Length: 360
Image (tube, rainbow, N blue to C red; front, side, top):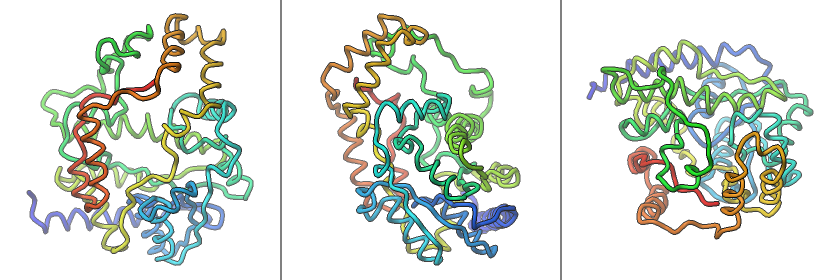
């Protein structure tokens, strides 16, 4: 374990790099928005923009139900904005046009099928259309190079971080194994290298997997309407965090330590402000749209007729898979984590043991 003095030296360099990156933003804060959540990254940007004399306008997208939860992103974001006296608005996802097949179609058209993170776009991207129509030029995103904020790395956990769940990760007999999908294998550049430890491998998977495969497509969706800047992904910050000891990168210690000194006692959010996938995927209009697609002529370019029929049969089956001992334990641990400090909660995050079972 490095000495406290060594950690302070690293944190001092990181503070300087973040301050430089946020201060160097060549933007008009009257025309740019800071999407503010209740987590660490956007709060970090807010703190250092204010320290550099910039006062960004903040926006949080949410649902009315989430706003009533005192530990949600929406509720915590409001506290952070008030602390610094910044203008803060909400955009309500379920006040928009509704979740239906048209919303799915618009999501696929705008994102070109690069991401399945539909939860924040169930309004047919009306939120981003409104941001553009209001005269805003862009948004300041908080993607960061620290990657995972959980326990010590493992091989499977590092792969999962890089969005690397493969068909073969599902057990024999699983629905996905019977759809006739193409074989998959890891590209050589993303495999564990000889003599490479799990911690460096996890960080590399964050930089070469998570950022380009998960975060970049979400930014691309927004870029259909506005510009996007990511100050925490400056080369200076990325190069610096790669030199940090493992213990300082784990559990988000580096960023969290810096932010907490500026915003304590405001807690970090424990709940997202977007609806859960299960909420809208069980909706009748969404199911109707999926069934229409599975029975169209176009589906043969993706799945065999047999594969499409298997999916249709799964949709017609009971919607819930039988609970397992592990799923019950994970549910209980999630409930306990809410009452614990963030660093302790991260340690209680279950290790990755293959992808979660999928219902129809």
